[in-house]
Amino acid sequence: MIETPAYQVQTDFFEGPLDLLLHLIRKNKLNINEIRLSEITSEYLSYLQGKMGINPSRESDFLTTAATLIYIKSRSLLPKPENLSEESPEKQLLHTLIEYEKIQKISKMLQDMEYTERLLWRRLELNENFTNREYTLQEVSAFQLAELFFAIVKKKENEQFLYVSSKNYSIASKQAEITGLLKENGFLDFSAYVKTLDSIEEILVSFFTLLEMIKRHLLIALQESLFGTISLYPNAPGEPSN
Amino acid sequence: MTNEQIALIEAILFVSKDPLEPGRIMEFLQVTDAEEFEKILQTMEKEHFLDRPERGLMLKRSGGGLQLVTKPELHDPLKDFFTIKQATKLTLASLETLSIVAYRQPTTLAEISDMRGVNSTGPVKNLLQKKLIRITGRKKVPGLPALYATTQEFLIYFGLNDMSELPSLEELTELFEEKEQPSLFK
Image (cartoon, rainbow over all chains, first blue to last red; front, side, top):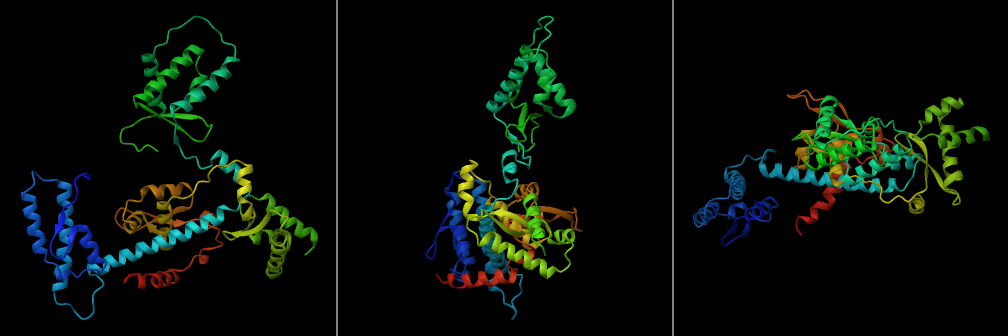
């Protein structure tokens, strides 16, 4: 859509894209009365005839802008009552423009205030920075997941395993188990889940299964904070990734 | 007021993590004269902290409360000492959204998006999470959209004592028009 350049107006009084024309008129740099919209329209129609097929995006852009121009012009041609009504589109546009500039001014002011305030440190500021009190969930990379995994395995190494008999774990059966757990609880706490497993072998297979599932976008790993626990959520289609 | 009481005020402020209402401290110390208390605070502000370059703290009034904070010129060395890379700042989109809420409150998401010209769901959500804005109620129009307003955290975040410290819309309009007039002919 963006690749195709917008239609360029080419008349005696103006040359360039149509939105620029509208912009200039809104800014009072050009008088709408000096512009012959019929000329622009017929130019455009002959331009379209020379084109193979239509580009809906470009054409609708032209229509919107042209319609606004026609509206502004028709208004300017109509006899006006003495007191201009606030509802005229130019005024409204100007109003929105001024409002928006005001917003930007306030934003700038707030930004300056934010900057000065940032220079002052408060008690527990450090804690907030380090533990990220806001609990914004961040998507976790496979690498972070692996780090957490190795931390857990290290912990497990010191534990005594009751090794009864070797069981065979397959990724397929693990995936079915994890999917089931996710369906049941909505999410899965990675550390808590690993703790329920019996052997290093099972942990390894589970971990590979998780990686595989993340790779296939079946689930999504989220971490509440740096070094925090990692939660796994089913990757529901259409849900915004945080 | 005794020296002991003054020392206690300083100690209370040191321990508290949030800005403290002066009224609460006054009540605790059984001070009834607000003017006297204010004078003590001002003396403390000046003589204990500001006038003494060897001290690293200062008294700050934000969100209607009192708080001890570090002096601004110490920001950089503190950052180095605690090896903090980059403090999170508000994005431009969030700032724009916040300025609309601050000046139009209570306001709806539709109004915010309309004024900014873009959908503002993201920034609003972000500001809600940061507790800089909150939902104060619902507008009595079809769909009952949530109404947003700024919070106490907003005041603290921007170092304001109360909302009256923000320039009024009239003042802003003047500022704006002074600047805008000549540029029309540039």
